[in-house]
Amino acid sequence: MPAENLSFETAKRGQLAEPHVVEMRGFELFSGMPEDSFETLMRTTHVQAFPPRTMLITEAGPPDFLHVVLSGSVELFSNWNGRETSVATVRPVGTFILAASIRNAPYLMSARTLEESRVAMIPSEEVRAMFDSDAAFAHAIVNELAQCFRTVVKHNKDLKLRTSLERLANYLLREMQRNDATEFDLNTEKRRLASFLGMTPENLSRAFKGLEKHGLRVKGSRITIANLQDLTAFAKPSPLIDDFTT
Image (cartoon, rainbow, N blue to C red; front, top):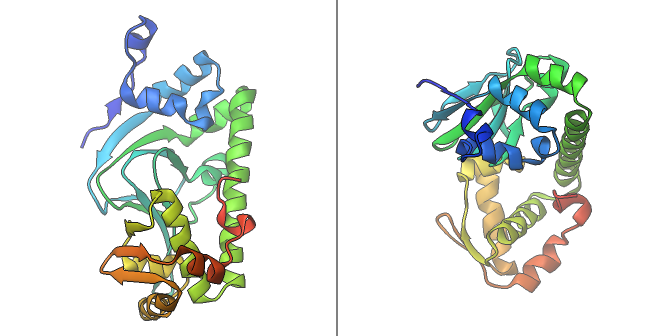
């Protein structure tokens, strides 16, 4: 599928900009850049639509592009010795993998689409050049990398400090907040969820069962938190682990 070339001529004439240009301009990574720097970066950017389960990058591969997810969702995962683990899910508007692009180092993870997704691809060489020349962009990149680091630390704390039941309970509480409802559908396959939470699928099934006494109801992918107070008391959520916005 051919990629779209981003054009700024329409925007320069005061008419509507391309939708993906507007989306990216509103993303914190690009919002503080001077207009000329942003336009320079966007001239080399391509946007492409991908079907579900399309491999976008491969672990150990060269960091040719910085990817920005504009719609859909992308799974980051890794393989070793015949095993696979799900590391993260990137949703709009989010980037992957910024550190590899900046350091010109091999990808530490692979990425594939989970659903039909639109992804912008910025050549890593251009990203590094803009990092050197534009202070606002460099500052935004440092902030983005700092946030990624803090997210990784919180995820490691979640894995190392909590039991499997506690990890699942806190994950469901975070999903409840994201959906703003005590009844919602899991947005990921249970197999992927088990991998993300550091469990086997069998352990995840037992964990769902174990949370029933704390007010959880599960029917297929439908989750109902029937007793929020009880589940919260068991999970003991902490902003130093569960709040990924700070």
